[in-house]
Length: 209
Image (cartoon, rainbow, N blue to C red; front, top):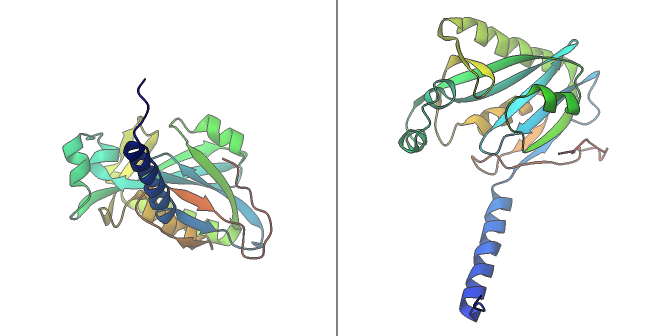
């Protein structure tokens, strides 16, 4: 093996440093609500390219996701299709799946059939979780005429009226849902790069991955 030249070594070091800076700059930061009343569990799931959210409900859980309709619901995942979703107003879909409880991270790992690169449990107020559940389920019921099951993502999808593009993708939507649950969310970019900070009161949260 030839030794690296100083210029090559410096170039690689610069590239690595730039990548680290960009990754940090593009990280989405979530600050959970402090001391939520009658807390229930919400799980933020990072799947690598997109995110999804699981909400505790009664003795079970519901997983929600959102994304480009053709890509996620119809599996039209070619390179041209993927690049085409970045711009314009593309059709979007809301994904949902009921999961058995209890709301524990180990059970989430067993029940979700797609890869999970990182997961965080966030305790949220029960009344906010209930309102978000009801709103998303009502939308899902309204769109039942477009219901499409996709086993690749382990979800059923219905079409959404909001357009999908690089400024409004699955990660932005999960960020919006977390805000509805009382969290502070600072989006660093469109990528599925997440960090969950301690609540504002300084109490310890569950940041297990």
